[in-house]
Image (cartoon, rainbow, N blue to C red):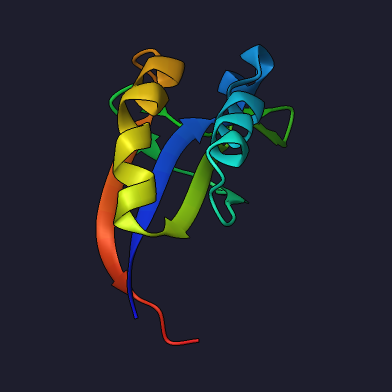
Length: 100
């Protein structure tokens, strides 16, 4: 079955403003079938290093919100997601083959 994968990359410190919760609430209210938030160990992007070490403790790790659903449900949400991100993060959308 052909579906679409939406990935939203943000940083853990973005969560201080509740960004992860805002994104998940938006997706739930849009009746998206499901979403997963992944925590990365390290990374970098246009806003710099995604992980900061403070006395040996990892902070500001990368977070990835991943959604797999129908294109017709995901594409209409892109403008709202961009607004919620307010210039932070990265959004990708691509076709995937779901086997199960």
